[in-house]
Image (cartoon, rainbow, N blue to C red; front, top):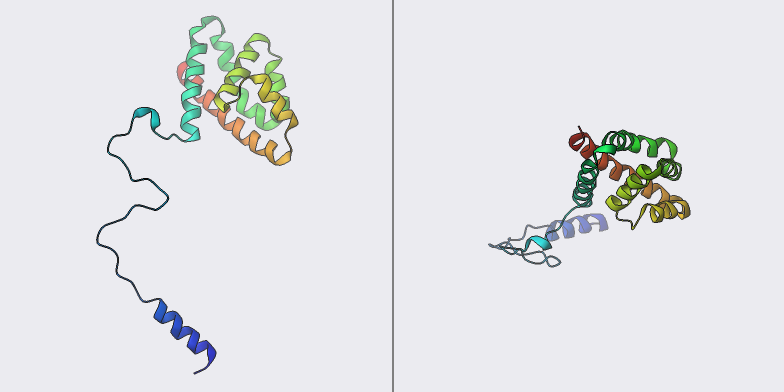
Length: 155
């Protein structure tokens, strides 16, 4: 028997199926599931958090009847604007639209999780390429949540 044949035999012997335990066990890195968890402690995905915040922002904008149509028009264009122009140019354009633009910029910042639109814009300006690409993707996704709820709430 040569070396290769011995290795194959050793592998076959090690690969014998082992009996499984009768009861499933919890993964060592995860806590066991509890029957009742408080509502404040449930985990949410990033998309769920963004959707919740975007809905609140759009509902707040819906209360101001004077700017509903303008808010909706600019928010509907926002994801495409960010994709085509880049996030820095797109955010500066939105901010140039006056008080409404500041509102939309702050709404986008709150959906994303930034303190304000100015902080978001400054962070986008100072970001290195890998971070800028990730921020671009994230802001386009956050703007998409704003657009979805504007379509529903401001119809």
